[in-house]
Image 1 (cartoon, helix red, strand yellow):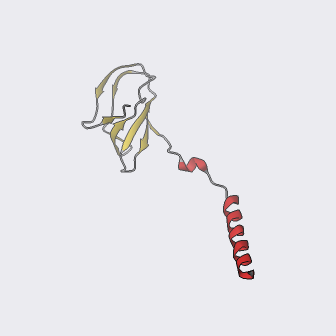
Image 2 (cartoon, rainbow, N blue to C red):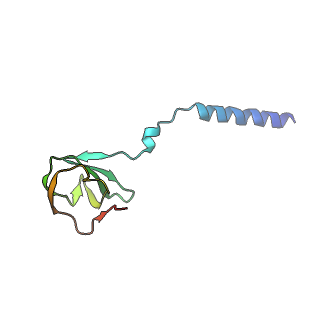
Image 3 (cartoon, rainbow, N blue to C red):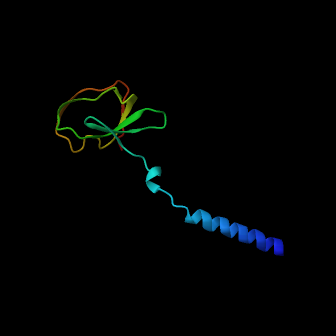
Length: 99
């Protein structure tokens, strides 16, 4: 019986120690990177998804690569609040994230 109490004390101490260790929740969230007028996120296969356009509008050329990552997807609301006149180019095969 004494052995069980010791193990319970060790287990309780371990649980209390783990609960007391601070965890930075922000490190688990996906963060957006910025390059020029575009915000993007790096995907698990080392490609990128455009998530936002912050430019002033007009004629926009979507780059094939951004900071060394191939653009393979355009997020659903990437251009929602933009005054884009036209998109002049996009990488062949890029997908849009539509609902």
